[in-house]
Image (cartoon, rainbow, N blue to C red):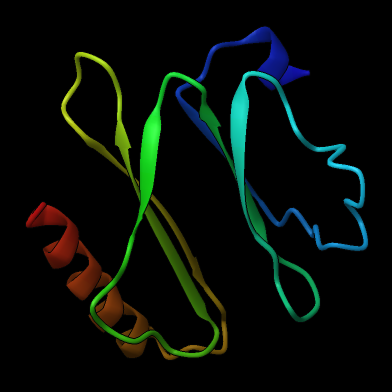
Length: 115
């Protein structure tokens, strides 16, 4: 598999379509990566993020609310000998008004830039 053969710092898979019924034995764990999942409660979607074991990471909490069909996940990665890196995953549903999404995106950029 791609992750097992390469040494990525982090790798994001969108539209993972995983949930507890599809992964009852951790069959999606990949050594030496830590896995973080954001499963969708409704149909479709979801993401899974793999962080290499040499990376320390923490979830960054947004200080603003999102439209109901918009998803933003931010993780701050601490990689040895490198300044902190922000990993940002953004999903905007076609049902969200473009102006609403752009407002959220501008807030996101402002908040992450302040790190």
